[in-house]
Structure formats: structure tokens, C-alpha cells
Image (cartoon, helix red, strand yellow):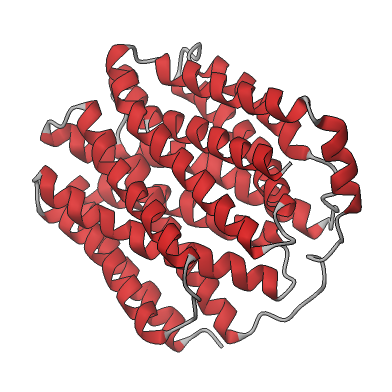
Length: 359
């Protein structure tokens, strides 16, 4: 069953990211979307994902059912209908619904691997590999036809549904037997607060890059395949780091924390200052190193301390929707290049906040 879980993680990540990059490209191409509209697009899906993940966490709904199977089908249907939206406001509605579907998929699939850290390592490599594959092919598919990424994303999600549905009864019985271990009211100590906040900041930067960088790159004159290649390097670096970190014992360290925030700051600042694809690729890929460290450390600490995985996913969602929204707003007000520079300065403020205010 774990193998099906790895496959589904890969497929849904592939589906998600073949669509995610295509959303800003589609909005720019069809509606000449501004940075603010792109930020709103990133906000809607990730806001609903965060909100409903948190609601399910507060309701203390036990994950004793393979929700990831049903979620895969709903994601597939949603992606299929994206291409038929005559105005971007209808896209926002579908993004919002998609966030709800994902809010059940990821906590459910994580629960499948909760008994064994070795499974978690393979899970990380599975979904991270799917992100790389989906992101890489997205720009090329978009160049062939603007709606093709949506169809391919829908197809991947449907295959995920079929692979789970074929073993539905086995999964149902397996989930019934899993212990309810993530719903104790455990105290969040200072260390885990810092780990969670670093993970939030990483996804804040990722959200800004995913939804606003395509606009910046489009202004410079990058093609859609080049944009997807640059962002693919980010996720390729994250995958590579996941593999390395799976071989060593990962620990919380204040020095690593500082360099993580510094790399996040540089990713934004250099992207805003330089108009060169090579430098963009190098400094955006730095984000992959920090992202792998923060994500893996956060999920291990959360599971180790018996804290809900919904909380972990909610933090990721908050980072993604605030990143896309705030970077979009700053880019709209100050110009897209200055918007990235100011976003880098904001990351430094985040570092000072966690350093001196988190108790």
C-alpha cells in the first residue's frame, strides 16, 4: 500500500505543479493579468487550503478514511474545467475549491506513512519528484497549447484516483487500524515555533516565486519553457537535498537557521536586481536547499511531538498564499523588480521576528 501512496504523491504533485506554473502564464497570456491579479490567484487556492486544513484540525476529525482517493478524483474534475473559464473570476472560484480538495489529500496521504520515518523519507522524495516533473513539462506543454497543462494535470490526478480506487477496501481497513496519535494538545515549545516559522517563510518565498516570477520573466522576455526550467531547478535542488538529508540525522541549529533566512532573502533580492537567466536560476535554486531543510525538519518535529499534520499543512498554505499575495501587492505598487527587492527585505524582518520575539 505504501507503494501506491508513493505513486499517488508523485502523481498529485505532478498534476499540481503542471497546473500551478500554467496558471500565471495563462492569466498573463489570456487576460494580461497584473502582478496583483496573479497574487490574488495564488491567494485563493492556498487560502482555502489553509483555512480548511485548519478547520479539519480544529474539528479533530480522525483520518480513519482514505480521503486522498476521493480528493484525487475531485482535483481531476476541477483541473479539467479550468480551461473553460471565460473570465479570471471564475478561475478564482475553482482555485478556492481546489484548495479544499488538497486540504484532505495531503494530511490523509501523510497519515499513511506516519508509522515509519523511512516511509516519510520516501514520501518526501515521491512528492518532490512529482513537483520537478510537473514543473519541467509545464512550460513546454503551455507552448504547444495554453490549455494542455490543465488537461495533463487532470489526467495525472485521475490516474491517482484509479490507482487508489483499485485498492480501496484495503486502504479503508488499513486506515481504520492506524492509531490516533496526532490530536494531543501538545505545547509548542520555542524550538518547534522557530522550525514552523522557518517553514512558513520558505513557502512564503516559494509562493511569491511561483505566481509572480513568471510575470517578471515575461517582462524580461523569457519563454515559457525557460521559465519552467528555472523554477524546475529550484525543485530539483530540493529533491537532491531531500535525498541527502534522508541519509543523515537532521537537527535544529541556529547557524543553519540564519543561513536559511539569508538564502531566502538573496533569492528575492537577486531576482529583482539582475535580469539574467543564469543568475536567476542559481539564486532561485538556493531556495531549494533551505526549503528541503525546513520542510523535513518541520514534519519530523511535528510527528515526533505528536502534533497534528493538518497544522503542518496549514502553515505551508499560509506561507504560499501570503507570499503570492504580498509579493504581488508590492510588485503592483513599486514595480515588479522593486517588489522582489522589498520582499527580500521583508524576509530579513521575518528573521528578526523569530529571533527576538518568538518565546
